[in-house]
Image 1 (cartoon, rainbow, N blue to C red):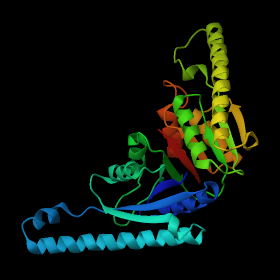
Image 2 (cartoon, rainbow, N blue to C red):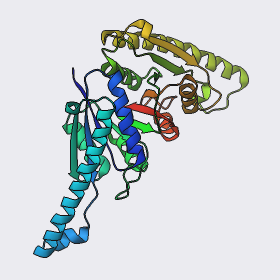
Image 3 (cartoon, helix red, strand yellow):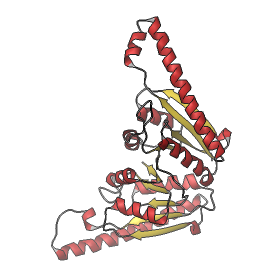
Image 4 (cartoon, rainbow, N blue to C red):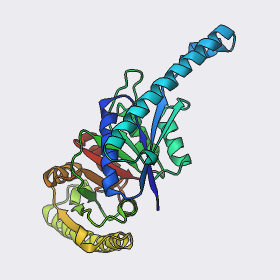
Length: 310
């Protein structure tokens, strides 16, 4: 089945890194196609109001819109050329530029959902000389408001093709595995590591119990987590195998943490040389991989890509 991602760009170096990552993903994801999208900067509201009253103002408005469109198409063509030089076929890259309508994040999501894209890819940060585009708020709004489409964030230069899937046994984590299995299906060489951070008592309860009861509760949590993750890993492996991946391509690791869960995930990715992290956006209840963890990882990400799955 053909897979396609929407790559949202501005004229920043961060978008250049996102485009580089998109081209690298072609080697991992068979049948991958791309649409490069640029949402044009807004036209002055004053000019819009004046154009309703004056033919001269309407002509100036038309000229401004034409300049925006020309600049956007030039930028998109430049990015397309970069991808072609990296080995992506010309026919696998579409270009799309649109005037800003409801806001950057909303306009990007509307295109992603309307076009039935499998993911939205963008640089985590960026500033265009013409507009503030990916300065944290846009990527944050995409993550918060994308109810269906996974959001891929790129920060820095990503060189490694290794994939780390951070999982916690939740439905959100299983959806992340579904997305991972679909995108990487048909690749006999990719290597995937499932990484689980064992929960601590304080991840579930902030009450300061006496030492002996606390030890008992911690033991119960550890036992329950092991049962949960044994079932989860079995289900996750079945999903990957049904997508054509073999058991030898997959490994599992469980780690304890003295830091935050998010820092433990980031440390594992850095130390293992992983270029792509995959995780669900939400976790079980308020526990280890809830919104705070995914938000922390998205904010502290460096020289890696993060796939966040709703």
